[in-house]
Image (cartoon, rainbow, N blue to C red):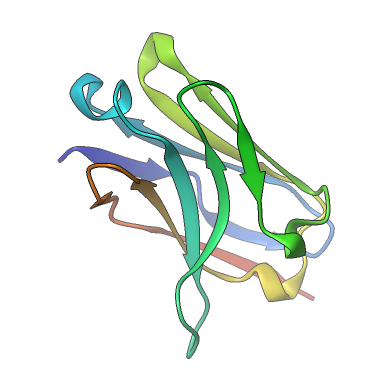
Length: 112
């Protein structure tokens, strides 16, 4: 397994979760890393991307609530999610953009 995502769970609206995606060094070192999500009945969409050089990009719906970061020491990309809303419910996937490799997904459920 090249990408291993974890950290999902059930949280009430307004709560926080931190997702982690551990990658192999060969993947992490050459890829911009992203988090995507797929809500029930909807298409998968980009949430945030952290580039190798430190640049970050966020979907407009994040509205300053989420922070993506990457830690080279352990080849891991994180997504800190605060002030979660029920519309944030879905399966969250990490993605290595250059290699086009997906992690297995972790379920986030936000109750109202």
